[in-house]
Every structure is written in C-alpha cells, then in structure tokens.
Length: 383
Image (cartoon, rainbow, N blue to C red; front, side):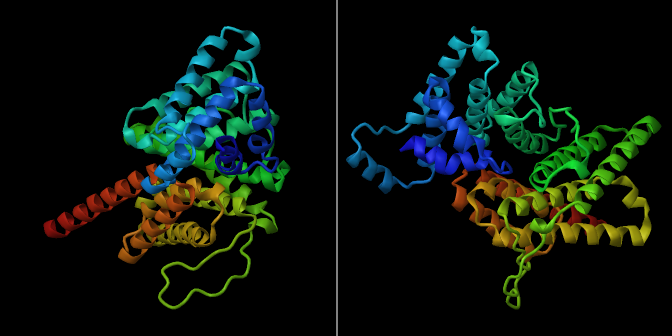
C-alpha cells in the first residue's frame, strides 16, 4: 500500500518536469532491490498518508490492519538513516543512483516538517549538494541523476527564498536556450527562478555606496533579463493559453488554462522570477512616474499569470510549486479581494497535495501583509 502510494502520488512531485517520470518508473524498481531506498519511500509515503487522513480514518485502518501503527514513518526514517550510515563505506554505494534517490526522498520527508523549525531539511539539502558534487551530478548529466538534481534544485530554490540566501548550486547550463526542447524549457524555468533568488540575495547583501557592488548587480541583472527574454521567445504552443469559459462578473482573476499542466507550473515559476527581479531592481525607484507605472504593469501581469493558472491547475504534481508561486504573487498585492483569493488558492493546493507546511506559508504571508499595512498606516500618519 505505501509503495503504491509513493508511485501514484509522491513520485509525481519529484517527476514534475521530467517527461520520462524516472522516479515513478525507474527509481521504484531500484528500490525493489535496495533496502535503503525502499525504507525512504515507505517513510515518505507513510508520513504523507498520515497527513491526508483524519482521526476516524486512522482508527478504521487500525481496525482493518492490525500491523498498522501511528508514527511508523519515524521507524522507516531511522532505518533508512541507519542503512545509509552502514553502507556508505562501500564505494559502489557512495557513488550510486540509489544513494542519490534515497537522500532526495528523505529530504522531501524532512520538507514535510518545514514548519517545525528544526532545520533538518535545510541541513539535508546541503548534504545532497555535496553528494552530488562527489558524483559530478548536475542538471545536464542525464538519467536519474539529472532528475534528482532538478528535484533537489526545486527544493533548494524554496529554502533559499525562505532563508533570504543564494541557492547552493553554481552550475551553469551548457546548452543555449535555443537548443532546449519544450520539456527542457520547463526545467529552465526553475533555473531562471534560482537565478532571480540569487539576484535578490545579492541585492540584499550589497552596500549602496560601493560602486563595485552596483556594477556586479547591474551585470547580474542584465544576464538574468537576457535569459528570461530568450526563454519566453522560445516557448511553443504547449505554453499558450487554451480556451476556457469567461470568468463570471466579479471574479478577482481570469482563469488561464495551460496544458500540459507542468508547462503551466513552469510559467508560474517564470512569473515568480519576474516578481523577484522587479521588486529588487533599484533603478526602478529612480526612474520616475513612468518607471513606477512600468513596474506596476509588470507585477500585475506576473500576479495575474500565477493566479490565473492556479485557478485551472488541478494536477497534484504541480501543487507544491504552484503554492510557492502564489506566495510570491502575494508579496506584491494590496487589494483585499486579491489577497483573500490568493489565500484561498493556496488552501486548495494544500487540500490536493496534503502538504501541512502550506498552512505556515499562509500565516507568514498574512504577517507580511500586516507589517506592510502597518508601515503604510504609520507613513500616512507621519504625513
């Protein structure tokens, strides 16, 4: 039951932009002959399944399955760690696909505890970074290793955003954007988002009176802008909006249907990157009224894209990334109805994927709004 749960549901988060779905088609077969990987799969599946059922359903399962125990995921988790510790001494394992897949799945397990503040997830992301370096794993190495790298980057992108730091990876794609196929462009959206988060971290770390910092920031921004323009110019029909019924009068956002769903999630990631780039571009502040209007149009377009796609995006594999992008959209809206709709869309994401940390994301977004509104109120009083 737990193995099937991983294959049918959990693996889809890891396979998000992978057309070959290597976690649900290949990694599960590795697990059949590798104890550590199987234990990691059972740990994640058990924990996720527990999050998705209420107390009555859990009691019913106890009645049906006498071997069922609350907290079985903890046992599987520690058995996984024990297996990895004991087996790492063998070079064949320390350089294996099984180790990479096991480490990533345990990282997702710990991401489910993001709200506990223990920091295990963040530390584990760094551990995977060093394992990948030892195996020369990156976003272009092919096979399951490449799939692991992109799934890891999507986790680190969110961790870096939450911690206001740069992403751990310094890999640069070897393929030019015009050489990428449409599926590779979806992965590239994640890379673009990682670079926007790196730019944000650089802006926050720079000192305004240092000309060297300013020059580096301008170069970093120009590179990112060029990359984003190239990416958008090479999108095919799969990224175009398909016909949907018009939104009823009074709807806050217009629905945008993109199919396949993963391309919609890629457009959300791109729009999140656009928001970060726009909010942290210093030149906009000194560009006068026209610069202000341009900034507002850019932000409004990005917010409408993220939220419009979220209205139509029901696929479970996309819900974690979609909720993260909705958080980004929430950073630049002041309208009460838009804020309420963003919270509602994040709640729908949580209900589809059973991801408890999203409750904390919504709370943090509310706190951000309260701080901004308080600052605006105090500024008005001072005037």
